[in-house]
Length: 146
Image (cartoon, rainbow, N blue to C red):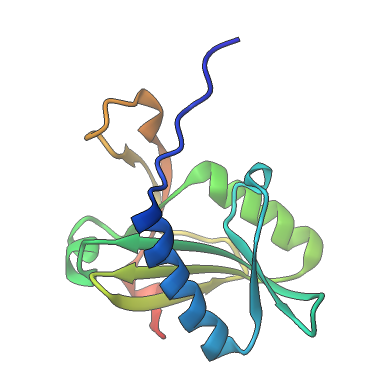
């Protein structure tokens, strides 16, 4: 069996994500609960202590929304997308993709799981071959300001 893949979440990454989570919780008046890594998604949002309202993926990017638009849209791992589609189809709940791009938070609520294409993309700066994979494109127009 091969070595475990390193986790790249730094304390700084987690703090920036936590800031987004706090803002989403305040806006939606729901509690964000971190999911186990096996779910491939970041959170569920819960009301009244147990009623799950949505599944959620949260990303913090240094790019602006204009730069994301020039790249063809926001890219999300096809593996995450298929996990989200499975959970949401079974539960009837939406999948929320929340992105903080250069400090501006926008979100897309996905129910139909249509998308704007599939590309091969990802990071090339860490020398990790697993950072490149099939990605689903979501146009910037799908995202609403928080």
